[in-house]
Image (cartoon, rainbow, N blue to C red; front, side, top):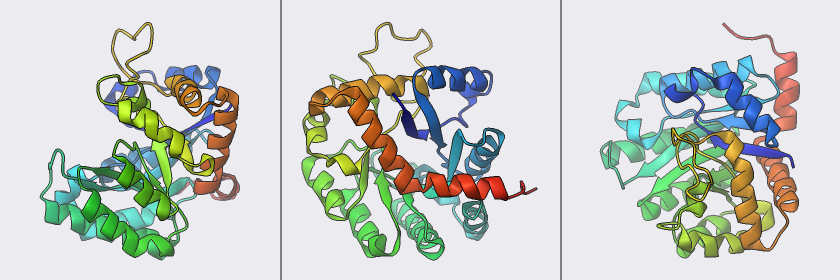
Length: 275
């Protein structure tokens, strides 16, 4: 089985002590490539550093999460534009809206989201998006830019059927995580995952968050790792009436196409590392 984890927070402090071992465990589980999520200014720079340190295995996104939108200004915008031009960066984001935690004022969230949409439009890059309890505002802003960007993934989808089909109507990809393994809050997603077209489905761990609750045994530190993407794939495949190998093959092809990984491979091979 060959898998791509399209969303792993490998810049998280919990991975600093043993990242090489984490990547080796992922490889042994069939997770051969990973996209490292950039969710802040510092985090996006760190994601790029990790991608450069592990060529052909890791890629990066560059963005500012809505939780940090209050800090988004001209300097952040200029930094993201610079990072997004690097060969190892495959998408703009993680950006979007989060009205569930509301860690930044909603007007600031919308402003930061609009500016990052503009980066993706200007540079012709895919979007890596976050939305929680903010569908109407999020969808309106996304719709205004959708036909001017090459692709979109709504990462860690947990919303309802209406939201799902709104995104599918915009030809977005949908990222599914270990949330689907949660018997407390993932039951509706277990039904909806069957309705995601095969060509629009992506898999991710969102590690170190969202450890699948049905893992046995559960790791003692409760840290999610990319190696558990194989478990998520098996659960998703079972719910869709597919073999895990079939689900893995299709979602891997989807990720390669959305993020242009083959093209980025060639670009990174030709480009000297920037200072």
